[in-house]
Image (cartoon, rainbow, N blue to C red; front, side):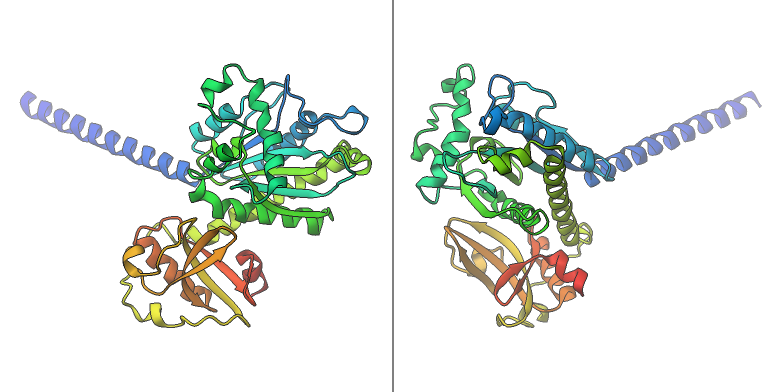
Length: 378
């Protein structure tokens, strides 16, 4: 009797341990899933501490305005579910350019947004947004050189940056290579925010530009640098230094980040449970002719400075890939259809072949437009 009772207790104990074990596994898996749904945004207030940045009208300092805007953007983002905000600085302290990138990389961030103010000896004004790239002209190089010069305030900067010379065009060109993978997403975000500045905030549109910023080079995720406006312009400087102006800029940046995340979710909402689809399916050949007079969707699978032949062996067996030159880079697209459900099939095919970051883009009369806006109108 005692032996039987002991056996039952032993079996019950084993069962309990197994049950607890599976509960722990389930709990951890749920945590992992929760972590995967969290979108991490790193907000970087330019300059700080011993580095005032640009000094403008009535001695206003870039570092102060940038920090106030960053804190407001962060506060708005923190109210949204599944968004985590990390700041490179929340007070008036000096942070090296390389350290700013390290903060973002350590957090495995999904976005890096650096906020600055502009300055010029003329009465220039307006907003512009930058992504990492080779300087398209001397003027762009001068802008990058001014922002990069802050490294000279860092201790042992010649060792830290391994011979990088902020005054050398050759050094700047070398910065772009590692960030090329994220260039399209960076341009996508920059374009959305720039559109917010010009349409909602009615700022002069100085465009989305490319230059060799060290702070963008140090990050391994889509990254942009915002020049909100010119603090050397008396009218724009006063606006930037006002509570109203800072709130309006913060709101525009927040709305831009929100729209960017929504566009990403449109492209990934069904992307985790994909059954591999053969590229020989009829859907591949269903609509391959471009019609620039109508709305069309495409799937962007790759981009870069290399001009590749659009042969299947260059794209993991995918056929009918289109190549379009944009500036100094090339974009590669799969599919060409007016049907959103059909283009989703193309995206599934691309992801099944290993293009995990493939995303849907829309064109109207040959001009790239927001997918989110198209679907809202539909």
